[in-house]
Length: 457
RNA sequence: GUCCCCUUCGUCUAGCCCGGUCCAGGACACCACCCUUUCACGGUGAGAACGCGGGUUCGAAUCCCGCAGGGGACGCCA
Image (cartoon, rainbow, N blue to C red; front, side, top):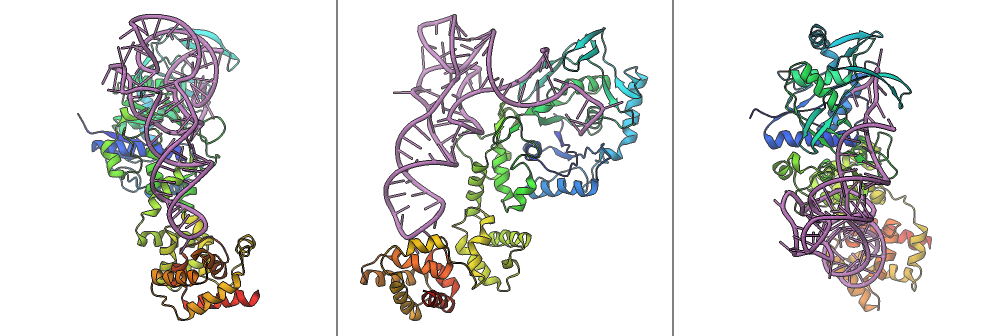
C-alpha cells in the first residue's frame, strides 16, 4: 500500500480551537503511526481576513503542541503552494474540467455543481421555498470510525461564488486530489458534507480518499459543541496560563481515544505506537477542565527543575511579574525548587512566591486569626528567634530537628511553631516546607521578618 | 421539517465485534479517613452507570427491532 498522506486544513480565523487541535493531533498521530506524511494546508479562501498575523496563531499553536508538519507553509513540499489563496490557477483548471464535462453550470452569477439524475421540484420546509431535487444514488462512505454510512446528495450546490471565489467543498476536494491525500481525518460535523465531496471526487474521476470522522468535543456545560467563545476553547489560553503542552496533548489524546488498558498518562511515543483509527470512539466527548488540570499537575510534578524554571520564567515574563527579571538566578531557582512540589499550576506561582521577592508583603487576616487561637504565639516566636539566631541553616532536616526539640521541650508540637513562624515570614498559612523556606530565605531575612512581626504586635 | 451520527458512573472511558468469567473495571470530580509542618502530593475507603420498551436466547451491557434523548448537517462560511 502506498504511503499515507493526511492533512490538517485550518482556516486562519485568528483563533486556534481545542477541537481543531485535536483534529490536527489525530491526523498527526496517524501520520506518525503509519510513517506517513502530515500536510498542513491553509484554507484562506476568505480574503476578508488579515492573514499574516492569523497564520502565526496556527503555526505557533501547532509548534507549541509539538506537531511538526512534513509539508506545508514554511517547510515546503512537492505539492505546494500550501495556501489556498495561492492556488487559484489550479482551481480554475479544475473548474474548467467540470465545465467541459457538463458537470457545472452558471446560475445567479455563481457556478453550480451538477448532480446526475432526474430532477423534480419540491417545497423545502426548512428554507420555506421550492427547490430542485435530483434523484441520485447514495454516496457510500466506509468510514474508519463510523463504519458504513450512506447519504444521498440530492441538490446541486455552489462551487464558485458570484464574486469569483471558490467555496470550501470545491477547493477542499481539488486540493485533496492534487495533494494526493489518502486519508481524510476530520470532525464529525463534516460527515454530512462528505456526500458532496464524494460526488466531486467522482466527477473528477479521482479516487475517493479513506475517511475517518472523529467525534466532536462538547462544551463543558450547556448544550452543543464547543465553540470559540466557550470557556477553555482556545489553545492560546493554555499557552498563556503556563500549561505544559505535553499535558494538554496527552489530555487531548484521551478525548475520544484510549490505549484499551487503564493507562492515561503516557509518553507521546507510546501513543504514536498504539494509535489507530478504528480505536477512536464514536461518541462525542464533553470537555473537562478538571481532568486537564489533573493531567497538567501530573506532568508538572515530574518536570525536571531546569524546565520548570524555564516555564516559570516565561510565565513571569508574560505576566510582567517582578520576579521575571530577578537578578539572582540561583535564588530564583531555589524558590522555584521548593515551590514546584506544592503548586497545582504555573499560574499560581506569582502569588505563591511573592513574599520571597519583597519585604513588603501583606499579613493575611484569616491566617493570623487562626494562629492566635492557641496560647501565646508570640512567646513561641521569640523562642524560635533565639533558636534561629544560632541554628544551622544549611540543612532542612537539621533545622527541623532543632525546632522539634524546642517544641517538645516546651510541650508543643512542631506545628505550633510552624504556624506563627510561617505567618511572620510569609504572611500566609500556605507555602513550601517551613524549614526549606527558612533555608532559602536565609537567616538574616528570616529573623528580620520575625522581629518585625514581634515589634508590630 | 429532512438527512446523518451517537447513547456504560456527574465527566472521560474499559467491556460490546467473538452473549455466561460484569450484582460492570479504571481515571477525574465529590465525600470520609490515613499520612503530615501549612498547602499540596500520596494512600485507603464510600457513593455513583449498562437511556426506555419489546424481542432472540437456558442466559444480553453485549445480538435484533422500536422509541426516547443527545449531537451534527441542511449557506454564494470553513
